Length: 82
Length: 196
Image (cartoon, rainbow over all chains, first blue to last red; front, side, top):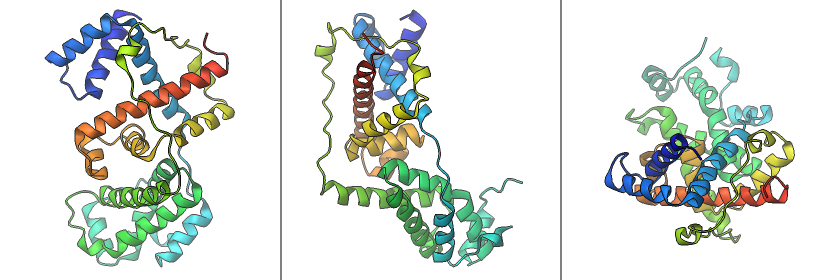
């Protein structure tokens, strides 16, 4: 993993732990990460997991019959807004 | 023309203006339905959540003070309904428990880095099913935090408020949920032969 990616990762881990970027704890995290390439891979793949999961998600439309039922229960007419 | 929520629109809805109420349904029913799908992992429950959230919101609309947007308000109502449903369900099922990451164990252990092509593999429908299964296996207390923070994009403070947790609790649960998801995906990739 290159230095730039390592820095990005350190930043995102600090954020995840709620630590200030540039703060003492964040510095310690960075130092620890430099000495632990396995941890770098572990956290890098964790970040990629979240991105992969989000990319695989797609917003679903409310099924028309569900929308109809909702308007009926609320005593509304969806043509009324137009 | 794109319709947006305005304080005037909400005031009209509070006065019983049906057109304004209809606009509020049109604006947010999709988002509330998708929140239901993400949190409850079940179409029928998501449909019920959508209906219950709007019934409660309109019934209590006169109490809405306008300190937030109507969307934030109904969103919180929906999250509370979802959490109630999840609590009921958790009495009936045993959840997958997350192994806490043991950083001492990580140190010195070999982890395979994921090749670049992994990102291109996820478009397959089969893979999406497997991912859905991995998410279903997360216990409710971790999944709710992951859904609100990572998928719905709420801040740590907003997530803590919605789930009635401390901010540090949110951070810990989020980290555990993410690491658990990573471990499940790693298993999948190994099974598929994408990792050595």
